[in-house]
Image (cartoon, rainbow, N blue to C red; front, side, top):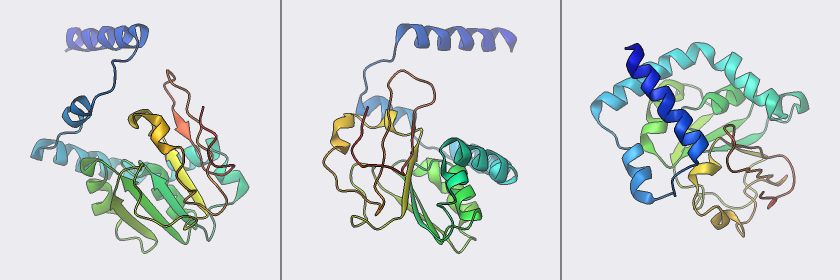
Amino acid sequence: MRIKQARQWLANIGKILGGRQAWSAESEFAYYSVNERVVQEHRQRQRGYAAEFWFSGMHMMRGLGILDAHIVEDARVLDIGAGECVLAGAMAQSGAAEVWAVDAVPKQIWAAAEELAKRPNMKFAIASATDLPFADQTFDLVTANLVLHHIEPLLRVRGHGPPARGGVDLDHRRGRCALTAAACGAWARIM
């Protein structure tokens, strides 16, 4: 087992030092393919996250500047690329009036939807970040945490009207491990 872990570690270091492979729809599809085993793994992981939502989600909210600003309270929130909904769940638990968790990849959101749909202020949708099913200025706050590195080409995001009344600040720096975007500032600042 340790040899396998060491090989995986070396492979990951090679990827970091060698750079990322060019994006392709085929590789994204293969990465996100679904079978029953994968669904069960996501369900099991989601049960573990349920106990950690408050801690890890609140940590993300603080890191994004959302927690200290108290802007989640009574807000309509959209979390783009919500994945397993750690951030979306924490925002719902922190008093948001409504939180929409959106992800383009069904397996990323299924288990979370099963677990969190019990909350009356949580809603879920499967949609692409470049083709959201919401009218402009529907939300008070939009987050896209660890998602922009999956959007290729990134420039497709430019030119879309802001889905939040207060605007959206997309901050993307290629090559970093923590690719984070927070919505609170001016729309269309894409780095």
